[in-house]
Length: 211
Image (cartoon, rainbow, N blue to C red):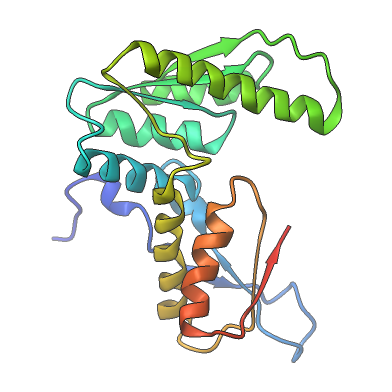
């Protein structure tokens, strides 16, 4: 019989998939890390577990506490999933106007979602910055008023990067040959920085590309 004791044990160790249709024959090998196979559907499961376990070990997060975060995407989903699996209440703060599907997923995992009415009025990247800042300010207010609230702080939490150092070491182990380049999108930055750190430990000349 083969089984795991918890669905959280299925986080990480996702396969590398060779993309045979992406490049011309004999021009190189391209592999994708299939992070969508993590239980809640993204690589953010990795950081959710790492940040929560780190906070528990440091005494910042205890039974009966509530986990909060400002998120409009996968981190909120992952924290909703992992946090409730570990017995915590989870509350996610986001601006009004996010897709109802995203909100429903978080709620189905057990989180309470707060939609904030923001008064920024700016456009483009400035508007995006206002959204990020205002939702984080709200988290700071909530945390400061309640000693039994732990704010994950994905944007500044070193455990975010540490989670992806492990991702990078997985890649090294799975591939078993030198990596010439690693390409990833940049959101919070933890994925790119953490994987790059691990890859450069093994292959100092690897090219790191952030998009």
